[in-house]
Amino acid sequence: MHLSAKPLTAFAILCLSTLTMTGQVQAAKEDTLKVGITRNFFLNFSETIAKLVMQPFPEVVKQQTGLPGEIAMSPDSNELCERMLKGDTHLGVFQGIEFHWACLKHPELKPLMLAVNEKTPLKAYLIVRKDEVGKPVASMAGKSLAIPSQTRPFARLWMERRGVVPGKDLKSHYGRVIPVNDSEEALDDVIANRLDAVLVEKASWDRYKRLKPSTSENLGMLIESETFPSTVIAYFPKKVQPTHVDKFRSGMLTADKNPTSQRLLQLVKISSFEPVPADFIEEGKELLSNYPPAAIK
Image 1: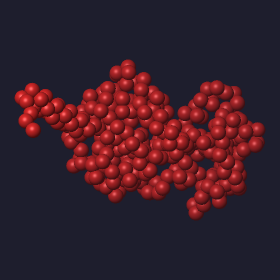
Image 2: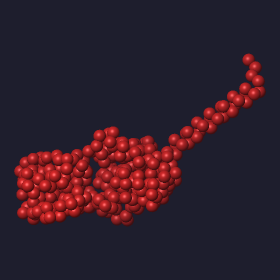
Image 3: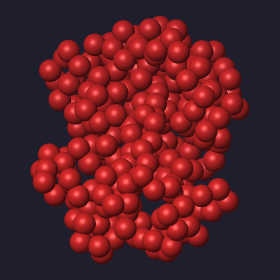
Image 4: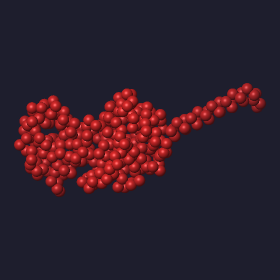
């Protein structure tokens, strides 16, 4: 069958347009900055809520770098590292202690920057009645411990390692380990002798003291944690384009100066992205000596 010149021209244009569009889609796909995050950030949330919490992050990436962003969740840092090594994920978001654990297995994993919330440093306390302050952790044997449901993994890890006597876990050291919904109510229960101790993060304890200054004077810290390292954005240098790394670094370090990005960051409780301190890796070695690798519960 003979085709006229006009249909051939139209057909050629259609083919060229299709190829061009395919190339653009492929280029856009290749330029997408894929970020992974571990499930441990969302232990207290359903998968649906976790996805809603993560939702603003790709938009921040787009705002700051000009690159389309995607974020996906991995069950743990081991799988996240495997995805990064395969090239399925470019950058990984790790809890500070998770990053240092991962580096023991993957020393080539490098920190790119820290995601910081300056208003809520990662610190926790075991709060008891005033007359219990100064006693050793052993004095809590057989007593009741409340752990608020929103307590983050770093605080749980610290409590599991430092809030018990050697050779014991939480359930064998304390008479009862009670999950509670509200830290303020649990602190009130300590004062009322309905509970003996509460694990609280610094932000919750500071808020309680601010809201109930006179009441809080009846409470005190039995023990307090060190300040745990902030969230780490990390990458494998050989597995991601240097230009993507540079764009992400330069763009995200100024995200807190962009009103739109700043609002989006507030939704995921990040005040700013900060450069990695020079002594970050050395401090991590000290942290590892106190908290050797273990699964976060």
